[in-house]
Length: 165
Image 1 (cartoon, rainbow, N blue to C red):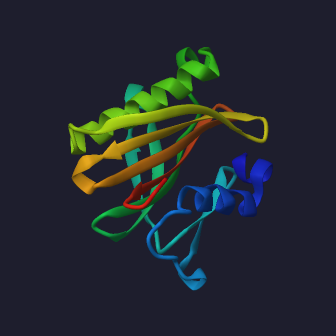
Image 2 (cartoon, rainbow, N blue to C red):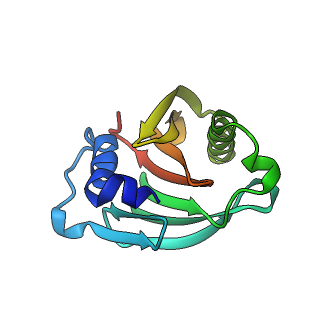
């Protein structure tokens, strides 16, 4: 479980590192906890809306998002259930690359001119991950997403908006 490996403070740090160049500081009292038992807990800068998002091969992600304005969104989510056996047999690198490719494909559906700026191997504790940074011309900003493979499930955090580095 990511929360056990990282703790609430670590997830807040993870998100705050993404937002460090945001134009306005978000007051502490606006941050709200999102908790999915036995999966993760994270703070988002406002009340989250839950949505189940279908992904490839009949899998789905339970996503929690907060959109403070038309130019920004903050999300965290986890895969429902475990990976199907044929996917679970693949190396973590393949699964994380597929996650980045899927995220980029969804971004390009919203803005075909999106440009991948970087894709970096990351870790949180012992769990492998990938960070994907995308320039979004339509929003004149960036999307920064981090996906991790934790006990056979994908877990993701995302920030999108102006002023992100």
